[in-house]
Image (tube, rainbow, N blue to C red; front, side):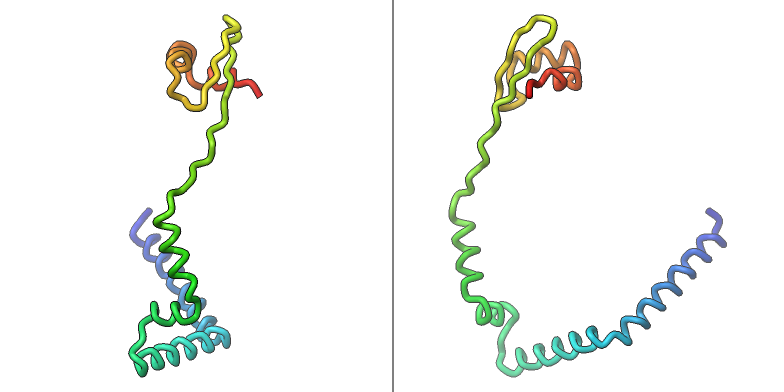
Amino acid sequence: MSRLAEFRAAEKALQEQLAQLESLKNDAGLKKEIEFEEKLQGLMKTYGKSLRDIIAILDPTLGKTSAAATTAPKQRRARVVKVYQNPHTGELIETKGGNHRGLKAWKEEHGAATVESWLRK
């Protein structure tokens, strides 16, 4: 792309962003949110509170559940047994993971995509 084309594309993008900015400036909802944020910041400064303090006041259980969740061990979902049947030999392999010696040998010999097509449903 030529430098002139890059310049014109950037100029067009800038004009679009300026138009979007103007429409946001006139949005009443945005003005209310900005006013709320300013008043909240002022109150926090007046009373010497941080955002974490405000959250703890509004939702006291939030901090407790997250602390309990980090200490409790997470349960893993049980793996599903997959059954592969070799159409050439009729041999079956049942495995919960892809680390089975026979399955690896089949994938090496016939290709992973082919062996995955042997999966019984």
